[in-house]
Length: 137
Image (cartoon, rainbow, N blue to C red):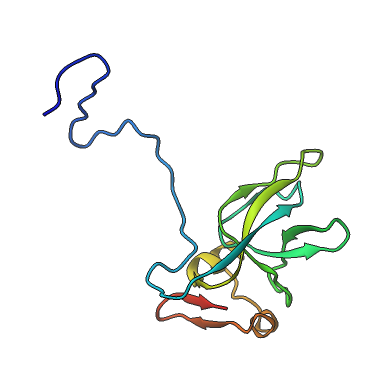
């Protein structure tokens, strides 16, 4: 039983003093397959990139950029949302998932609601299971 003392806060039902945050999980929780990820440098000035955004390496800057919605080459997907800032900022870091089982609804939403192009699926050796909401690659 908690004692009433300075610093003790008894929170009543229906009240939370914690800040609210909407977390979008990219990885499929009920999959037994692991995932592979690494840290990447993102090019500045792209705005906010959502969780699951398809990314590709920009050969000119050697930094990752958001892939076009009809891209046939995709190097991976952002694990978490990243704000890349505006031009002139320092480059931002993010995590790229390059193999695993992802939630397809999250990937599709981050791709502007458009299905991943067939050429990109073939290049990633990927398949989509809409029944389980899996994107497997």
